[in-house]
Length: 532
Image 1 (tube, rainbow, N blue to C red):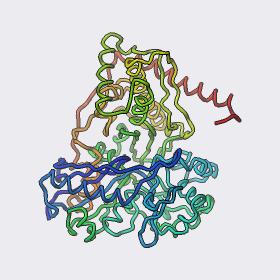
Image 2: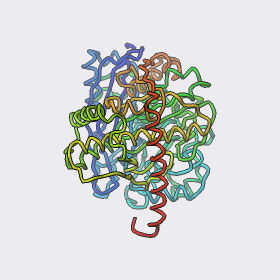
Image 3: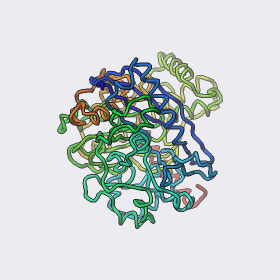
Image 4: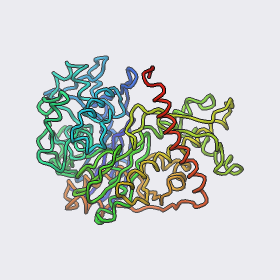
């Protein structure tokens, strides 16, 4: 058996796999698409068997790209979106769709069907809310499970397993129905710092008293990187690996990215609270670590042991960022269907326009980017986007200006979250960015200049796969702990410092940004009782 590892990342639209060396270098990578079913507004569903097949294709492709044999791989781990997979007691698929088709057995993380149930959870005032920022999100699993029990009782009655997607993948790989401390602490109201971690009285209060028995939830969660055993014979054959390969308890995709960029600071718990991980793609997550709990209203957590052992994690986010820029292109008459080439063309034209106008380009155009709610720091899934400063101009240049100012709004949203964290004791001055936004030069510039932080662009080709690789290396025994794997495999990065000359412009924009929040609240108050 060699000392290579495989990290698997399942995002919203594809499964990716990477083969990494013990030093963290990415040797080969492959990707395979997955489908999404959206039968009605706010409903989004996956087929978990299709996801598993896509994982197999990606792993085999990554092995080929690396020129590696299955026997060279000592460990594998999985990260995935926080999507909810439902299986029957025999492991078969159960439909979570109003259409009833069995293949759609997974509620996607961004699905907002359980808005009412999330509000009910918040209204309980239960102390589990103290560890999720005070407000339950419809993107978490508890309200989605409530929705299933109420609206699809046949699914509930037929269930034998409820999995977060990363835990489903380790189950498919190893046959072990373990649950990661990352997934259940962050999305299922499990309190990782307490024993028992499950709060049965909360489940009783929200009508889920039979959840643990119905869903096959173990009494204790498994630490990230715990060795869950070898690949099963079936999984080894499907993945192109061997049964000597160990399976590590995985984590949520954004958390794998955070581990990939913050892992180098694992040995400095006292100073790690100056660093913020920004995992930015379709949506954006920001993650901050500290040696002690720092509850922050509207920011998820503090979660214990959900990223690094003995550290507390706070997690904020924006539910639509890359997706919002795609929407702006699709929505504008000069946009068409969004594509990588379309984004590049728009970005290039913005740079040309800024040669004359500078940062004042479209300076009266302002965008509040809450088109899919405000995850942080307002924790308001009902929040809506606002655009101020529109004209009758429908040219391509007007699209470019709107795109530019939407990007500014996205960056200011990160600044809003950062200020909420710093008000609770963090001293964040460094932003580590990973994900699709690395390919967008406007956003990378704005994360330094509009947020006001030093930005580090990771040297790792794919920090999310690197994070999962660190977990796999821990399970395989290549490193003796997740902390030592994170330190030993970290790749560093390139620094970008904020431009002091840009500060006055973005300070004004931020003042407008905050005022727009106030005005939206005032308008909502005026409309209270009307159609929503």
